[in-house]
Image 1: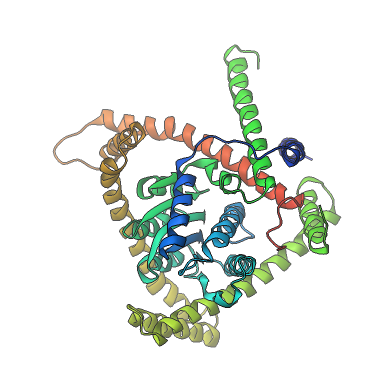
Image 2: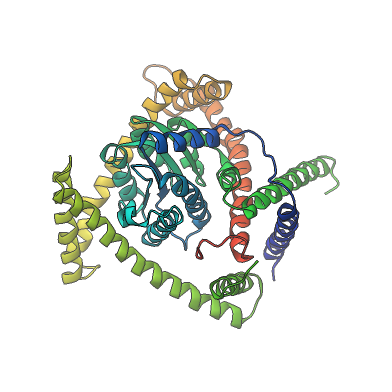
Length: 248
Length: 204
């Protein structure tokens, strides 16, 4: 095992230990309180408006596949879709999920189907609420940008593996209503910072599960990430000081 | 926690994949390769299902005569034409390559060109829409970087090029690395949550 893989293994082991510890603590305690984040407040407002006014929400899951490096973003998007679909399935116009990958679209259909079943509204479930709008980054964006005008969407939530082409989806969504957006891709984040009403920067994307109360594992995960982020910051600053003093 | 067969399979699969990456030796690596190949085959089948789903969406749009259904007709014709060319001649045949290089690629480049215009307009609108210090810093940085990159007529401003390089190499890289570190932590935690069975996107 070379040194780099050893360090990665150590980091994964530390994160795993922190996650197990946080999960066991969170299971016994009340739901932890996190700092205020406007994008999730806006999402709750849009969700409420969608149910009351019978308008549609569009969840854009991106073009990333489950076997690629950015699969985590797709999983977070699906977890968020699960919460949105549970609340929105009673709306006259239930939420719609788009993807550029077949497997993610299948999972999105499953998430939506379960949400309808939980709300005892299986007869209203339409498999095409989870759909592929195009294959590949540009193909997906070209199809997804027409979703807002075609489906009478009033809020667009871009949460998944999308690059700078997210701007096209967000811009089209912004003409019809609110846009909330987050992605792993740095260029995609820049594009969403400019075009979305409520951009999620960096790891804020991973906080969505905890803020939307998906399950306690998401809250524990967010706490473990917060602790480790401070550890990483302390390590970087410490190493910089040691290096500056010529001790390393 | 009530463990089910699917949870056990998911945890075991994830553990083998992770061990295959960390531990040297043939066993874990070969099992990991088999799983990865299987995953790719399943992903490809899912892609075909996805294309079927895309076709269904557009056929419904045509059937219900929704606004823009003419584009859907064009899309369905294109889908079957390209499918026929690739199936009849093979993916490496000049006809198939021509479809990609002469039709798909230029369209994608055109879309990226559109993206530049969209970002420019959205950037200007951002100044009025979200009045905050961050927005001002973002806009000024973008403006300086553009000035330092674009060839300006009649004047030469070498300090702008230096400033652009400094912005690109110091604060931009520092910020991007910070974001990437946070994202890496979040992505690993998401994977571990599934691996430990805390989160079960496959079991509902």
